Length: 78
Image 1 (cartoon, rainbow, N blue to C red):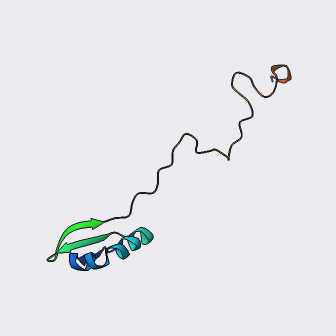
Image 2: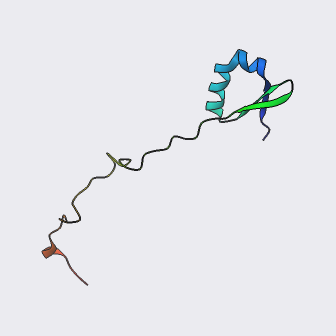
């Protein structure tokens, strides 16, 4: 895969459009000045999700470790 390259002047004139394009296509763009690379515009990393609370609304807690849902008298041991 070849990386898209453009001059700084072109980038300056179309900056907002190019940033949207990079975000949507996830394809980086190398920005050059007098034909030499000076910067690379890359898409942001995928959003990191917080571990605590990530299952809110997905998982239902039915009991507690200290107080199980099923009384101990109903447990069977094989």
